Image (cartoon, rainbow, N blue to C red; front, top):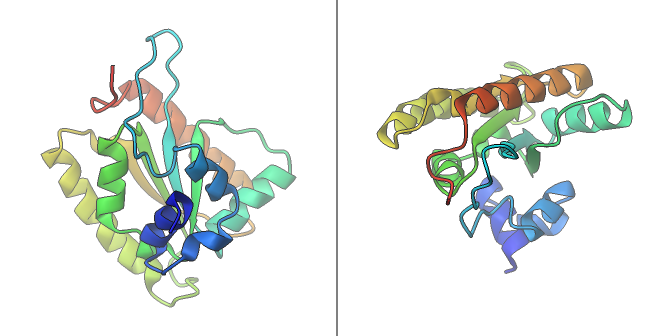
Length: 180
């Protein structure tokens, strides 16, 4: 199994799920998604945050696509990983991304009641609560993680959430886990 397939398979829990990874595959091949090597530090003047973004396939990923095709402006600091459902994102994936040098993690899913897997987004909400508790144990600010709902028709909302997250993480500064 290649690194791309492993990355997507871990995120979705499906064997060989990476073979259909779209823009996430490029990110994985560039090492942004798997973060197998710690992210190296940059000078404080040129530092830009890296935000790993888990998008549910049915709503948030399509919302991201709509933002792009509508030519909406949002920061390029995000690396999108498409997952089948936001409820499939295990807390360990979020913690691993943050401890390997990502400055923030954004999880985007369907609005409650609109999940294609019925209650996956409710599971994501429960997992987000657990993640928030875990962040303190790792010495990370809770603002480095965020769960939001974005539907397929909400391209402008996607751009807004991404912009807010990047600005929030910029105020926090580089992750303490970023290699100098």
